Length: 193
Image (cartoon, rainbow, N blue to C red; front, side, top):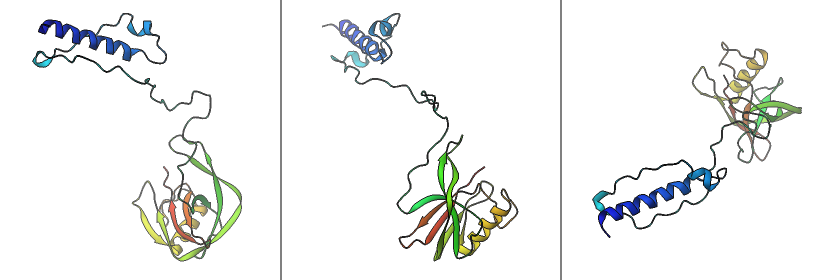
């Protein structure tokens, strides 16, 4: 076979492969091939590949972020947490020795999932070595002990959105780690804008 015939054969195989690849789940074979032209790239060194692998699988459209079933838009569920951790909203009554809080349920948010307080108030003692991690969109993260964490929580409950207290307030949701004995060992403030 001459070099020009090999080049022509390679071009035909390439054109056929592109034609097959153009047929997706919503295209019939005559829609994908009709009016389509493909240009084959010149073969280097005059050697053409004798076979072309057919396209496998079907291409799926990229997600747009908008539901197609008419459901709510945005972020509606939080990522799973490790065992012993949950999202809570602290309430009045939190002290340097005891966290008073409500459990949360997920609610749809535009930029991230939101949390809404649900159920009755609960309490959990702070472990003696409990750590708090304060986060804000207007200040650097800050690690604190239980007494400073309780002070921050109470300032934010008294004046939501406070930017002048011991540390800028966020929206009020915290991730909490509770050990097997029911004591709070660590809390992370969730920053919000």
